Length: 129
Image (tube, rainbow, N blue to C red; front, side, top):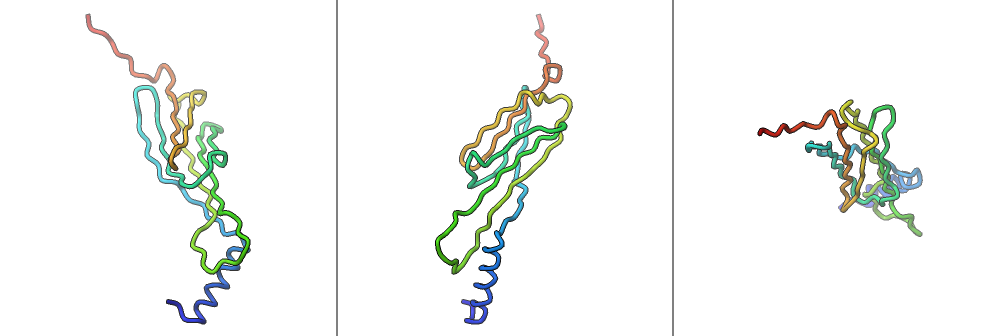
């Protein structure tokens, strides 16, 4: 437990941070894998409302971002360990990917972005007669 002095200092520090709008930027953890038709990016972005997520391609770069804001309270924090968070990652798309064929889904805090391959990049299976 904190002493009375330390507790007052910590509380004042928390008040200042809360009034200054604590916000941190995080690179979400990602897994990227390849299928025959696409590249799939799975990004951990917990606690974000779907409408606060953004997926865009600009100048050959895939940008994934989202924002989580803590609810505003009617009162004074006695302790605050949570922050408003801005998530962002960017990935350069290889030429064999088709930025016109991107699908994004969000479920249980995981953003799944599927990027289709261009036709010429797909492996061609030759049937043996």
